[in-house]
Image (cartoon, rainbow, N blue to C red; front, side):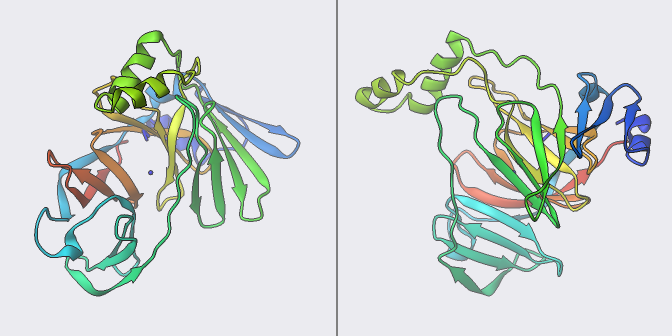
Length: 280
């Protein structure tokens, strides 16, 4: 599942639906579709949000009750009654936990999940859904389509993802990270796969309880830094950015809390609830 403004940008969200907004975003109409164009300066003007540690709640163990052991967490959701639902792809079960982390009796088995494949550095289609709004993008450019549940294109959100040039060293780093421990014949087969000349603009889309769009920038091979997210409001205005550790995967975002999958040095997966601080 970004990183995802100043007081001026906050006011813009309530402003008019067209024209220039403080020089960071402009709107235009194209055959009935609104284009929200965020300028390169928009990211630096955006507010800095943070996920505060330590976690408010952590679910998961290395040893013990199997209900608390996860292998490949496929998703999680904060339910309206305060419970937490977690999809464990390894066991193909949907498990429910009380607001204090206690496992509740009963599991739903054979839950399904999917994955999209691709070439080296090839962009992959990502989606996010909230209410009547559906976001979809390929990651090929800094652009996401906003459609309604009927599939009608309503809005296009655009931004500048920066320089995405792929160099020879990037290909080598990618092979080492992914196939460094693989048998020589396996590594040689992937060495023959051609690499694209540009990285994807992003790798994941998500949304929160406020209807904002979260976009996770593509994490380049060899980069030991954090993941970077951009957050756009329902109008397509870039309002915030945040960083998360590479070992943390955001599963769901609420108004002031986020559910994340975290792993330790033993690769034990846990689902943790954190406070989300929305900076101004």
